[in-house]
Image 1: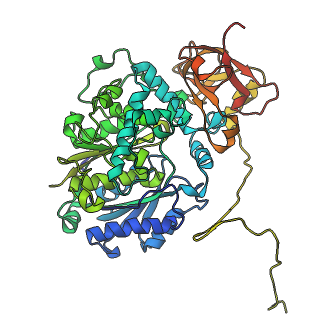
Image 2: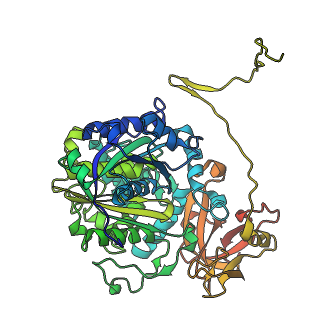
Image 3: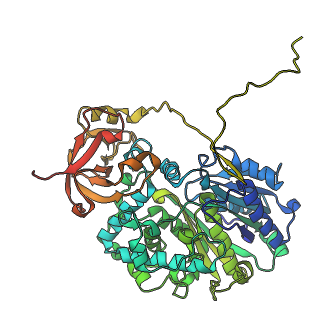
Length: 420
Length: 164
């Protein structure tokens, strides 16, 4: 932060159950359900809301432009200020940060961030095509436009550079699908073994069906407030302690081979021979973490943070992200999961909700879903909202959420901390 | 007098495909032809017909891009066209068994990022003539070009650079 701004708190959240297809509701009604849940939880009325941010990725999925204003209208929030935020897979994380900025700047005291995506209007193959239009349409898309293919090439290079194995990737899938067994909002809870993951159909070598998230319908809502308002609304608001955003080149082919931007817990000698980021790592994820850590005063991420919800659209990207966030050094991501550190009862639970792999990935809702699950963890209200406290991380005081767009082009990191 | 209370829309027989009645789910068709300009990238696509692979080189800092761009990502200066070697190596690869709808009938296919000597960045392409188990990082590959051009980036592809 160049200059100190106002403190911003999250005061309520709501999520719909994510599903492959839920045609009984359209996007407006889905957001309304999540919105009412959050508003009721916080005891707010429409008059308490100063404005909103709409979060959705693709106009293609619904073939409806201006979906944002349709939601604003349906929720009864017109004529209040609103805007739409879009940044691929990171749309939700970027929109959450845009909501933060509305409060931090002093423009608003209470803001609603609502996210949604309705991907079931087309078949999965067409959906893959729409998503691939988020790659360069001159040079990348016509070759076989398929994001799983791009991430698979990154995974192959990560395996080559660092010796990461397909079994290590599979362990992420086992962990996240298993956690989701206790998340009633999750799309794909499953009890799996490493063999199950490896034996499922190959999508893009080395990623199998169970290494990859699915298409989803869903909505999520986060309500943010200024310090004065937050403590009027709830006794347990959650402080947004730091935000960071990184970017990288659209084309994987353009990623440079330079030096690692270091976190406080690293030194140049850790990475003497590593060409960075190449196509093995997400430089945008590292830059986002660096900015958020500086703002939040985090110098030793694995010890300063209690839990993480990160963007695991692919098992490989979860392992790559352990490293970007400095939970371990570059090259140690595979070992990190082997040692059980990101398991629910491990050193630092990662994706206790099940993540994108198992909770689902309705793109515009995803980053906000992470904020809602993190909010409930830090409020210690998982039992209330899930009717099951299995996933409640006992010592949850400070957590990190991480949202990520295609091959790491936009990445956001937000650090959240219980106010008491 | 032009007011006509007996005005009536013509009836047609096309009807609509209905997938489900509760909720009511119908088929909605949409297609479009774009007038797509390659703009400042045009030379790359024209050169494929001459069996040339054109990258770019920054006039100021000398950074060389395998995938062309008319301004340098490193320093913001203008670049010039730079003819790439037609032989390179596999930097990384995958084999896609699924894809977007447009490419489903081409599966399985290999994607590769190719590295070239003396070039700072990579080039994404298809690799044919090799199965997943035959491909490795560092594998020598060479560019081939379609005879009948499609005027898109698939006019160039790579094959293993080995003796027959």
